[in-house]
Length: 105
Image (tube, rainbow, N blue to C red):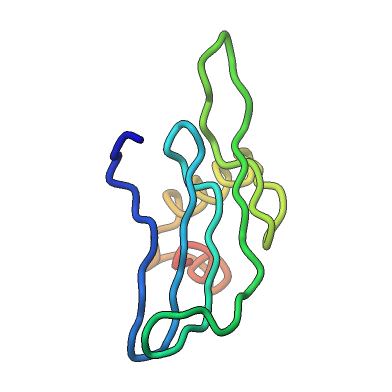
Protein backbone atom coordinates (compact mmCIF):
# COMPACT_ATOMS: atom_id res chain seq x y z
CA UNK A 1 0.00 0.00 0.00
CA UNK A 2 1.31 3.42 -0.97
CA UNK A 3 1.39 6.19 1.64
CA UNK A 4 -0.28 9.33 0.36
CA UNK A 5 -0.50 11.37 3.55
CA UNK A 6 -4.28 11.03 3.83
CA UNK A 7 -5.67 11.58 7.30
CA UNK A 8 -7.09 8.23 8.44
CA UNK A 9 -8.59 9.36 11.72
CA UNK A 10 -8.55 12.08 14.34
CA UNK A 11 -9.34 11.64 18.01
CA UNK A 12 -10.59 14.24 20.47
CA UNK A 13 -9.66 12.68 23.82
CA UNK A 14 -11.44 15.37 25.83
CA UNK A 15 -14.81 14.97 24.05
CA UNK A 16 -14.30 11.20 23.54
CA UNK A 17 -14.94 11.44 19.79
CA UNK A 18 -13.06 9.78 16.95
CA UNK A 19 -13.61 10.60 13.28
CA UNK A 20 -12.52 7.99 10.71
CA UNK A 21 -11.89 8.77 7.02
CA UNK A 22 -11.67 6.61 3.89
CA UNK A 23 -10.51 7.57 0.39
CA UNK A 24 -11.13 6.40 -3.15
CA UNK A 25 -8.52 5.28 -5.67
CA UNK A 26 -7.74 8.91 -6.57
CA UNK A 27 -7.15 9.88 -2.89
CA UNK A 28 -10.40 11.83 -2.67
CA UNK A 29 -12.45 11.67 0.52
CA UNK A 30 -14.92 8.77 0.17
CA UNK A 31 -16.43 8.69 3.66
CA UNK A 32 -16.22 10.17 7.14
CA UNK A 33 -17.74 8.70 10.28
CA UNK A 34 -17.84 10.01 13.84
CA UNK A 35 -17.71 7.55 16.72
CA UNK A 36 -18.14 8.03 20.46
CA UNK A 37 -15.20 6.28 22.14
CA UNK A 38 -14.10 5.32 25.62
CA UNK A 39 -10.95 6.69 27.30
CA UNK A 40 -8.76 4.09 25.59
CA UNK A 41 -10.19 4.84 22.12
CA UNK A 42 -12.52 1.85 21.85
CA UNK A 43 -15.71 2.57 19.89
CA UNK A 44 -18.81 2.82 22.10
CA UNK A 45 -21.30 4.20 19.56
CA UNK A 46 -21.15 4.94 15.83
CA UNK A 47 -22.98 7.67 13.96
CA UNK A 48 -24.00 7.12 10.34
CA UNK A 49 -21.14 7.53 7.88
CA UNK A 50 -21.20 10.42 5.43
CA UNK A 51 -20.28 9.26 1.91
CA UNK A 52 -18.93 11.46 -0.88
CA UNK A 53 -19.19 10.84 -4.64
CA UNK A 54 -17.62 12.71 -7.51
CA UNK A 55 -18.66 13.47 -11.07
CA UNK A 56 -17.64 11.38 -14.04
CA UNK A 57 -14.92 11.62 -16.60
CA UNK A 58 -14.39 13.56 -19.80
CA UNK A 59 -12.10 11.93 -22.35
CA UNK A 60 -10.67 9.55 -19.77
CA UNK A 61 -9.82 12.36 -17.33
CA UNK A 62 -11.83 12.76 -14.16
CA UNK A 63 -13.47 16.11 -13.57
CA UNK A 64 -13.20 15.49 -9.84
CA UNK A 65 -15.99 17.77 -8.68
CA UNK A 66 -17.95 16.76 -5.60
CA UNK A 67 -21.31 15.47 -6.86
CA UNK A 68 -23.10 14.16 -3.77
CA UNK A 69 -22.76 13.96 -0.02
CA UNK A 70 -25.15 11.58 1.72
CA UNK A 71 -26.15 14.03 4.46
CA UNK A 72 -26.82 16.87 1.99
CA UNK A 73 -27.61 15.34 -1.40
CA UNK A 74 -26.59 16.44 -4.88
CA UNK A 75 -24.33 19.42 -5.50
CA UNK A 76 -24.71 21.73 -8.45
CA UNK A 77 -21.66 23.56 -9.73
CA UNK A 78 -24.02 26.10 -11.28
CA UNK A 79 -25.44 26.97 -7.84
CA UNK A 80 -21.95 27.20 -6.36
CA UNK A 81 -20.82 29.48 -9.21
CA UNK A 82 -23.86 31.72 -8.71
CA UNK A 83 -23.24 31.90 -4.97
CA UNK A 84 -19.56 32.73 -5.53
CA UNK A 85 -20.46 35.36 -8.13
CA UNK A 86 -22.95 36.90 -5.69
CA UNK A 87 -20.30 37.03 -2.96
CA UNK A 88 -17.73 38.59 -5.29
CA UNK A 89 -20.16 41.18 -6.64
CA UNK A 90 -21.46 42.07 -3.17
CA UNK A 91 -18.58 42.16 -0.69
CA UNK A 92 -19.55 41.57 2.93
CA UNK A 93 -19.44 45.29 3.72
CA UNK A 94 -22.03 46.23 1.08
CA UNK A 95 -24.21 43.13 0.74
CA UNK A 96 -27.73 42.67 1.98
CA UNK A 97 -28.22 40.73 5.23
CA UNK A 98 -29.13 37.55 3.30
CA UNK A 99 -26.13 37.86 0.97
CA UNK A 100 -23.85 38.48 3.97
CA UNK A 101 -25.10 35.29 5.61
CA UNK A 102 -24.67 33.29 2.36
CA UNK A 103 -21.14 34.59 1.79
CA UNK A 104 -20.08 34.03 5.39
CA UNK A 105 -20.91 30.31 5.22
